[in-house]
Length: 358
Image (cartoon, rainbow, N blue to C red; front, side):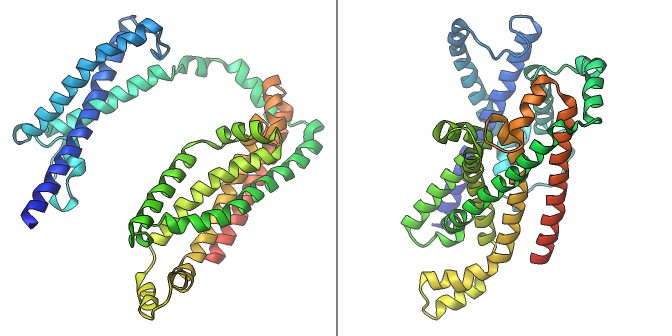
């Protein structure tokens, strides 16, 4: 039985390793093709805006997928000659690590090095990096710097009022996120959801939902909620609340997974119910780090709330973006100084509070 399980595990590792190799080899070949087309003039610098005819041409990449799959399989089959592939190295248990060798003496090392170089070159073209423009447009840079270092008092009063709104926007989003994240974090902790199939299903569901929510930037959530409740700080609160819940669930659940299980097992031995085990065995261990994470999240929300206003989510960003668009750099300098001073004070305050808690 043990030998069969070992063979099955090794077979699964081999499949996972082949999939990783397939993806890496495919990316390698796609970037080589992209750079060839870009430097030969058959495609623009970015190569991302495709015509309908070019989209149909994507079907020609199907043979490339087959070639990369064959190369990945060949690498694994000839591992004794070529050395282990990147996929096999990533799926290999740490206790089976071979003796270290220089990367220049292995095919895997050269492959990874070339893949990194191709990624840099491709990224340079796709993002249209223009260092010459950046380093030669001194007149525009001088106007911006001159305005920023000579702040204007014309926007000071309005900026202070909206700065207060920005702080409370972040505070309300964090306050609304705490109870929701606290409850969901227990369902997102792996060590507390092993007892039944239902608990494991809830774990996967909560984790997937939080990963999706966290993957969407607060600016996107702000646009969604602006369409829902209208322009204003409430839309900004909702946007930061959704993102804060997802972020805090991740932090809270990972802290729950690292608790000492001794007190939990001792309480379970007395016949306590599940809620009692949570109340007396888990919660006392996680409250201090939970408070630290929450204060840190409020600090992050204060920074984020200054940008939420760019799309109409309230706060000081609401008046900052129009002044940037109009080139009123003196007023922009005033608003930037207010934001910097607030973030600096919040950073000091949150650091002091976290020191006391920890």
